[in-house]
Image (cartoon, rainbow, N blue to C red):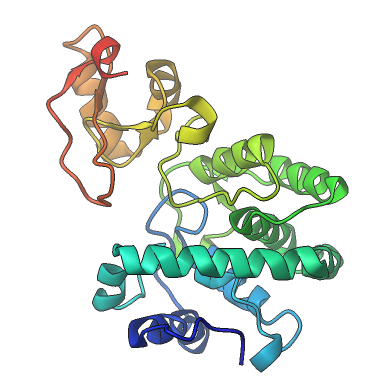
Length: 278
């Protein structure tokens, strides 16, 4: 078995099997978010990559670093994901995975999956490999970073609704999130794809010195400033865009809501003009 912290609790052990259950029971939800690892394709690829070099002792823990967004996770697991105990356990796992990757597994993963790019969605799978390496904070050779960027630029970033069976590759918010991660990546510093990122430029708090704010109207997108929000207006989905445009017709400025620091679903604070909110 893979190395474990001796005092690990039963909840941690059960959570380790969420990704395995995903492989045994193929998901059909498609996508529940627009960013990296907020859809079945990303999570299923992560589970597949776990077994790149075999099962049992050889199986990796890559998907366990990012499955906190998994809509197939049971309710008790989602509650546990928000606890301090889980945050500590996750930090230990990320550190453990990074050491394994830096010992040679990172290079081997890129070598394996770059050779399979001609398969269905093979180029995007290499992007997922790169994202997992950044999530762990692993050292990535410049050639692999450059290649991941080339692939990401080739793959379209789709907007709006896509039928689940046609879901593959990026949504725009995930594409810019990935490219911003590449631009600002520092080996040894894990890049958390679950934290708020701007839906237009992809940047996160560590990149801009402040946490992007939720759109005060649609409450489903984050923006780092009014310019990014305005540039993204036309790509809101029909319902969100209609509400934002209706409100904007009566106001001279955009409206952003405050973000609740540790809540996935939160009510925005009192709205203010963008000059006050940012």
